[in-house]
Amino acid sequence: MTSSSILLKEVTLMKHENPDGTDLQAVLYSAVRPDTSRKERFKAFLRKKYGADVRLQWEEDLTVKNGFRLEVGADIYDWSAEGRLKQLENEWKRLAARAHGEVIPLLQDAMDSWTPSALAEEIGTVLTVGDGIATVDGMENAVYGEILLFSGGIRGMVQDLKRDHVGCILFGDDEGIMEGSSVKRTGKVAGIPVGESYIGRVVDALGMPIDGKGSIHAREYRPVEHPAPGIIDRQPVNKPMETGLLAIDSMFPIGRGQRELIIGDRQTGKTAIALDTILNQRGKDVICIYVAIGQKASSVAQLTETLRKNHAMDYTIVLSASASDPAPLQYIAPYSGCTLGEYFMDMGKDVLIVYDDLSKHAIAYRALSLLLERSPGREAYPGDVFYLHSRLLERSAHLSDALGGGSMTALPIVETQAGDVSAYIPTNIISITDGQIFLESDLFFAGQRPAVNVGLSVSRVGGDAQTKAMKSAAGALRLDLAQYREMEIFTQFSSDLDDSTKYQLAYGQGLMQLLKQEQNHPMKQHEQVILLVAALNHVMQEVPPAKIGEFRKRLLHYIKEEGLALCQEIDQTGGLTDETRQEILRLSREFLKAEKEKAQEGR
Image 1: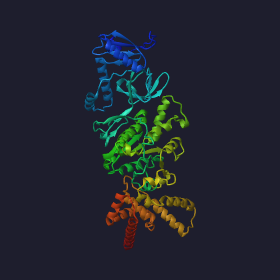
Image 2: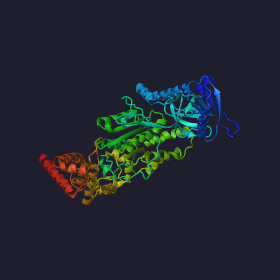
Image 3: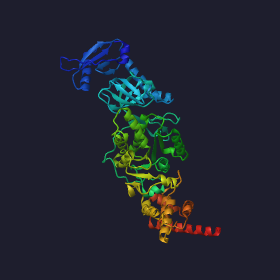
Image 4: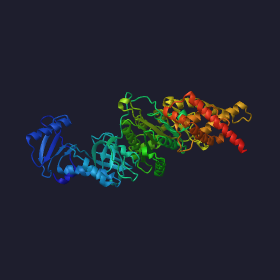
């Protein structure tokens, strides 16, 4: 056998009936004949590996230096000096392909951590390649989700298992791959490196840095697909994950470990709600992960800059698979982000992860499925698209104290078409999540921002995820707003209204104005409680709706100066006593009276 045939691994399956009844034969190539004890060790290894006696034959091969090469059918165990160097070369090519210019640190890591492997190499051949998909022949033992290594160091993941070939999605440019190229199994499932060094960085779907700040030192390597925690491993969702948005924290509270869907048409402020929630976690010991799927690279850069300006990158990771990235990277991005979150959750930390957005994720998966020739189902989506998102979102949980008590809260975002929440993907994700925040286009364009639809939004965790102060202060806010919306519709065609109806309409309009909030300005808990107590006790009733925004700012400033201890008590204890409520009302009415006197003097 020549050295070129050894390198190309052109091995034919050697099967024939043996005298002892087995039909599998192993051939051992080496420069020196093995002694009896070494033969017995080889036979024991083969018996354990293949579950039966395998006939062993030795053939002299002077090209196999300092070791041996064992061939069993299509499996090759190359433990020669040449084979071990080839393994190191392949490992180096794999890392260099992902290096993005950071070659020296990667080379050092490869030299420090690499150890030769005696695992069998199964060599396949590319049948077709294109659009980020490759079909491969000769991978009889490949498993779903396994990583395959193509020429040029490009990696792919097995996504489709058929009788005569496997379908593979490629994590890189397929220009270096052509029909007839060789493919190797790695025996590993798709995964990404994880560690604390990722905090403050922008990475791609494979965990490699794309922010130009150098390489990232990873603590470990984790698979992107992982089973969700079981019922016994979870505990109830009862700790608030405050968004800083009055409209949400008061009526649709989110708890740590919850999955709350943000849904609405394009350009209605969905990302703005997620961004404000991230900004509001400053100083609360929460690790935030923003996963951008199919977004414009410029939009992701702008969002990252907003986070940096507000010092939120100190506790945030941005993972981006932009619209220019191939569909396989957009498909794997949310699972990679979830894996990063699980690393911190398993350490007992609280994690907030935003998937922006799962509509584009479903579209990317549909493209891959159609290229893999899977039959489409409802609305041209493959039949397993529900499982696509359920196995992702179910990984968010509040872990039991025995597992460290960490949590991962998910805010998936879904885009609707013309407000149709009954479409395929929205209904799928609504049924998976623990509630949804529905953003309405008409409210948004009318200037009501955040444009939360009170009637269609819901949190299935509810008051369990609120502090006592917020629960007590919010009171009947949602009911009052629902009554206002009904009355507004009923009276829009009437010109003659009684005083009671006018009073109710003015009160409802004041509440709607109160819920308006500037972007990137999340409120603290004591600010929300003060405003709710004052508004729901009709302190702001006499303030014109158009002036409530300015009145609100000055009221908060006044109470912080006159009742600082009151604000600190609400933030620290999370409670609202009757004495505190009465003090808020006293200060609010005092401020209102001073404002009235000032207005009269101005006349």
